[in-house]
Amino acid sequence: MSNSVGVVIVAAGRGTRMGTAESKQYLLLQGKPILVHTLEVFQRHKLISEIVLVTGEEDVQRCKQWVQAFKLDKVAAVIPGGTERQHSVRRGLDELKTHWVMVHDGVRPFVQDSEIEACYERAQSAGASVLAVPVKDTIKQVDSEGKVLSTPDRRSLWAIQTPQTFRLSDLLSAYEEAERDGFLGTDDSSLAERSGITVSVVEGSYMNIKITTPEDLDFAEFTVRSRGEGHR
Ligand SMILES: Nc1ccn([C@@H]2O[C@H](COP(=O)(O)OP(=O)(O)OP(=O)(O)O)[C@@H](O)[C@H]2O)c(=O)n1
Ligand SMILES: C[C@](O)(CO)[C@H](O)COP(=O)(O)O
Image: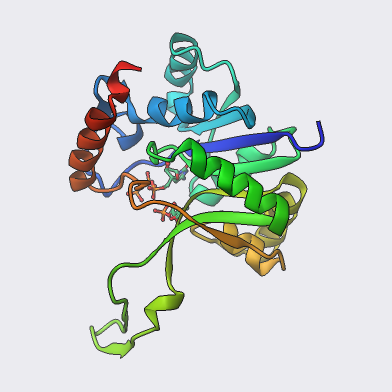
């Protein structure tokens, strides 16, 4: 299938900003690990044929058990990640066999089916896409002493989310280039951009948060409850 789409779900982080003993991706929302909520979105999506899950080395076994227990049969591999997100994504990419790849954070359980579809369609027409929202606040560039340096025009600023969608061969080349140059980025698009790939923004929703700090959990609990996802 020339348009097959796989997803690499990265969940090998420690969640230091959350500050809990348990890594944040395994905290429960309505009785189910956050990571499982995320996996279920891609499991049920008609466009996705294969999922590669990247976790901490010590978590591979329990994740494999959840894959069985929650009948996540699109999960083709559960593998250990690396020190940085970029290293974890790279390991995931090496496992995929599809033509297109979406990279998604394991701690973004609220991405919508329609957003995944829009990301895919944009990537097909533009070459690559990222889901994003326009920033709501005024953003300032500030130096290390706290002095304001500049106020960029907000109309051109977007807060970037996942999924981020690419041709697998393009993203692999971008990752190889970044490794060669010692470049470390905080998202996949930044690697693609520097290797000359045009990336197009798809406007998403402010609901697609990356669960990062404790106050995000209240939002997440509220959202799961109001969507009734705890009963799915
Ligand atoms: N070495 C890493 C670091 C991060 N991630 C994943 O990348 C996603 C986004 O990262 P972030 O929210 O920053 O997660 P953590 O690195 O776990 O958080 P923190 O920076 O607070 O430690 C998460 O799903 C996280 O598990 C990963 O797979 N491998
Ligand atoms: C990929 C990402 O989720 C886009 O917002 C984000 O850049 C991950 O960054 P983090 O430094 O791992 O939080």
